[in-house]
Length: 136
Image (cartoon, rainbow, N blue to C red; front, side):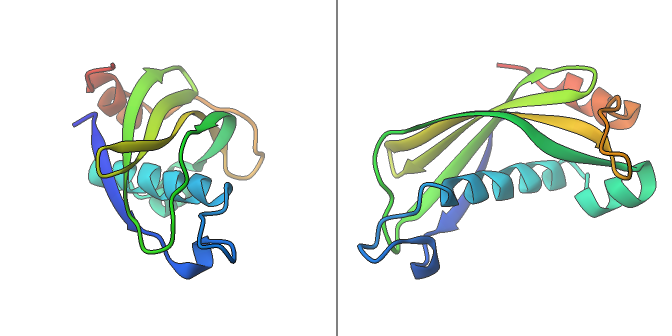
């Protein structure tokens, strides 16, 4: 369950005039993949905010662009949970076009109070589910 894949098609709006994906668009693809990873575990972000008073925000990001993605490419965003802390999750995310690795990133998200935007512990229900995953 830890290894999660999310497919995304590159649309014209994701690219520059030359048909190459904007560097910032990879972050959007990765965000969607993390959201769908959570959803696959039964956690909906709007419900986490409404019922538990938390949201996850990106705290740290390291990204390496290796090859460009282009208009109409079908990409796979692989998402793996690599570390779980009291108030943070760390992911390794890889963008693939077929077998070609285009981009890789390490993304740390922090659980914060939805009103105060201050770090808070990940609620036990979520933490237990995350800890149960085989961490790579």
